[in-house]
Length: 424
Ligand SMILES: [Zn+2]
Ligand SMILES: [Zn+2]
Image (cartoon, rainbow, N blue to C red; front, side):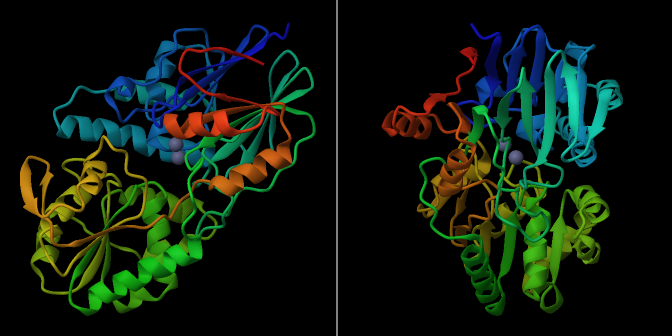
């Protein structure tokens, strides 16, 4: 019998609280320790076993949001991440404390936990191979998803296990797509399933054109455009799209919130130098002045899913009832967030927004500026890797079940589920 196994603690048949742990003989290698969006996942992943190493795929909240908690719980585990992921994670961890304090919520961890987590991280580079245990190597590959994102190939006793993490094969304005890898002897592929079974309605170029056309039409009639965007990557990607189309020169464009991340991108991403020209909303006074100004403008505001008491929440609350304005959603909206709830109510004349009822007169639209592989790219990945077993993680339960049920018997396909060990 094989002495390798895999168990999930989160980010399995749902998105949020990502964690998986491989057991290779006596060595336990975990990947990510993310924060969750829904109630069952808000305390983070569910896992009580041992942990020798923790590999981090990328600096998004659902993958690294609670790493300082994990670092405290397993004080001897070594943590591995790219320098870019460490920079973004550090911002995220500090921001979580800041937001918790401002909202009077309990702190998820302390500043001392952040400091000791940071100290424990060893930085890795793309294409580097690490030796993590007897007969156990890990190679780091670029995943294209955001700055510093990576996939991992774990090789145990000569057998390859490939974990995509969140992955994108499309070249975007700042972040290049992941390489189309082929692996010999790939026994197991653990892949993200965000868009599994979903129809790709528009490619990136078409999506960009649709977004730019709607923005330009709104500005020309004197409206304001608010683009709620994830602070990490989506805000910068969106600004770069506007810049490429010449809009940042023609119209006032502001970034409101998460500016420290833009600075990290400007300093670290190889082709993000133009972001240093981005104007930002410096304080509340300026925000109110912009709102009351009659000028047409674009505001790229965090948070991406309209969390309460964030700039995007404020701007959306202000502009929802303005017939001339456009609220342009450019990232995934989890159903349990204010953004997800607003989207679900988009056809109604009056919508609940926070604790008030607001007349819904602005245009509310979604643009799929995805940083995840689409369904077809997932198929092509499986084809290239030719694994014996495919584990579907980081997706919607129904979509994964439907796909796994309909697919043929070769290779073996299985849905990741929290707490259920898969023997490899
Ligand atoms: Zn991500
Ligand atoms: Zn994710």
